[in-house]
Length: 252
Image (cartoon, rainbow, N blue to C red; front, side):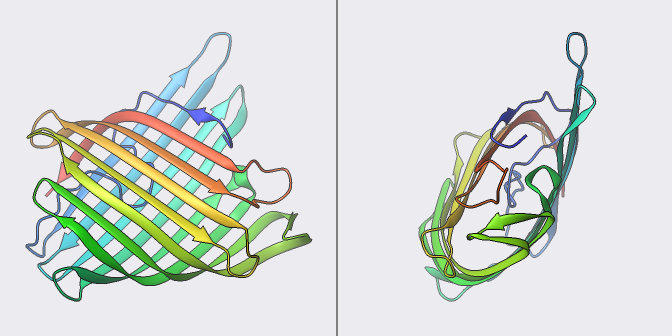
């Protein structure tokens, strides 16, 4: 899957990144969630199938917000595994005043195709609400974090063969939400992680999602996710792209 676009017609909500499901955020201190299960299948000259399970939830008040997310993706192409990925995310935001907020976040990623048994990352920082309106929000944020990688097979990272690798990093990002109409919403998020141990190296993630409501519970969705690492290890491509269309089911 690395370095290629993986497309599927999904029967469920498929989310391409950290907490990018179209969960409606209301400051009433109640949990809201989007759940999904996706499947694509092709046969003939080639045989391929992809399964994706997702869950995203948000709990917000007038002062703070919890965001939780998870994704499991598995695929096969002509009998060979083409995708095997598990992602779990969590984030807590708390407003310090009307414009400034603090946050803490943690992620777990297992990606067998990228030679990762586990990637554990955590970070803290502050952000600024550039736009905070009913139709549009735009935030910028920055902080520091730590990332620890456990590899399936020892690989060359930072000029040495390693089973594991850990480093402190900066965390710089922006995200926005846009209510384009009564039935259409768009969200995007870009985060860069410059490496503080090996300067010049960095990771980056970009996620975007579009949802068009069919009714109160169901929406048509299209999601795009891109992951980049300037030094992913020997034999692994630097870029990983995933694009999926499907249906989302909302729980309130």
